[in-house]
Amino acid sequence: MGNGENKKKIMIVEDDSFVMDIYQTKLAQEGFEAVAAINGLEAMKKLQEVRPDLILLDIIMPYMDGLEVLKKIKDDERLKNIPIILLTNLSQKEEISKGLELGANDYLIKSHFTPSEVMEKVKKYLN
Image 1: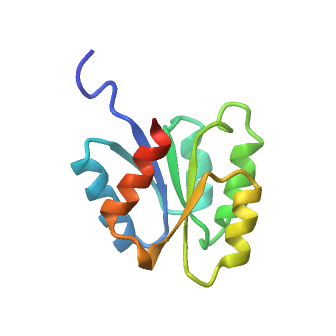
Image 2 (image 1 turned 90 degrees about the horizontal axis):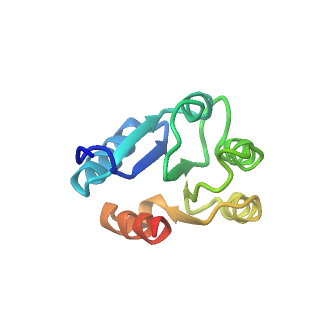
């Protein structure tokens, strides 16, 4: 096995390219392989080819919001066991509780978390 083989894959579904860059850089530094999707449609398309070990999922996105993506993932036998951490804003209390009901493992409030704290949560759900 080459050492690229067993890297954990983390999919980031996030339409804000600035936020995406931060997470991608941080994941790469921590030795993960980041798979980026800029909206829910792209995420669903990529999930047909890639099975990530964990998904960081933004709730507010154009075309298909995070909760819709979450539902589709949970309805898919092949994908439903992938841990999902929602990326949210402080004001999204209802969406957060809905997301957790739909089977998300956890959530992060974007403005409150440093990338290192995000990594801590990611690692928690990978083990």
